[in-house]
Length: 284
Ligand code: NDP
Image 1: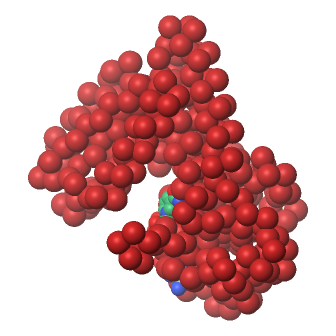
Image 2 (image 1 turned 90 degrees about the horizontal axis):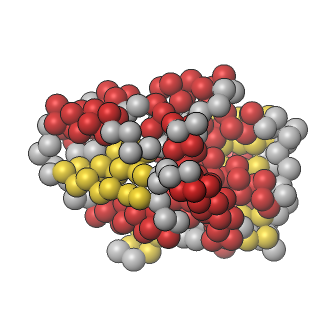
């Protein structure tokens, strides 16, 4: 049976590191502060935002909740971001995704408007560029959290074959870059990949970021592989599952993250690290 990589244990370590960083900043009179903008009332987004604020409070990081109506215009939202960019007491800015349909068409422009030094989601093209050339910068929270988990768990990355299923800008691609940075041999798969099961079976580290319940089955996993399930799929009002058929895969894998209770917790913890990192960089 696989070792279960519970997010709680690793998130606690990431949060402890963020808490310590925040404390050092407060001793210098700097109180790290995150501003979260949420537009409309998507119930899942509201849960995520509440979670982020709760975690900020836990670590004594200030957080501002800016709730805007679904009819907010592109101009209004950009003006809000401009004001937060100009406010030196705000160190991190996050626009909760997904945006309502009318604004989603402008998502690239909106995310690019955030001052890259305050871009704690790591989605700004400048931070994406920094990641791709291996320069310091703010990294996307979900993949960065997965890397921290692998490091804390003592799972080797260097020289290993990492296969990522999914090539989104927020998970798949940055996960690939971060693993590459740590000297894994990386294969990114997507909906047009041929022989996906065969490729997945070669993975020492298999990351599923697809958004389809039970996509990764036991026959796609090499015995002893580490399986990281990023997927969050709601299959009933109160039932969340990942992209991996957990029951079957845990019998084959060497280590596996559960859903819920896995990667989701790492994401929020890494956001706290990013807020502290951003505050430190802006006040150095
Ligand atoms: P996207 O929908 O943006 O990307 C999904 C990716 O999966 C795409 O690259 C797509 O390929 C690929 N894909 C879809 N179908 C197949 C298929 N049949 N075979 C192979 N590849 C396929 O999703 P995200 O990356 O944003 O999120 C992925 C999952 O992770 C979701 O369940 C999401 O809820 C979850 N998530 C969890 C987070 C956490 O904190 N735990 C944070 C962010 C996301 P193509 O590019 O060709 O379309």
